[in-house]
Image (cartoon, rainbow, N blue to C red; front, side, top):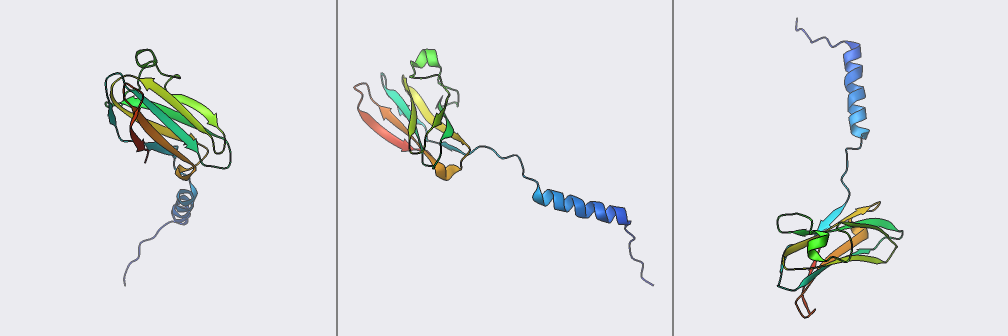
Length: 140
């Protein structure tokens, strides 16, 4: 006679309850983020990071300007137009930006609260010493 394993009822019930709970639990989700590729800003140049809210309601968008190593570009050393990072409520269809002077590699990072990746876009605009646009890089 073949022997079957005996599983106590409470262990079986616990396994079913755990599976149900795990199936319905929402894992910790990071806020939607986009970033541009890094770009080398020339001497006496500047960088402009601009975010656009494509959603139908105001959302808080955080804009960060970072250097090649991933560090925030410091406010005092880069003569930025706002404190970096800049978090602000951006109305539906509106934009927000931060600009910093100074050379070196830069990239822009954008994070939105209360929306998905399809509700916002971002772009890095690089300018030379005469304030002429030399590159425009979209965030992905």
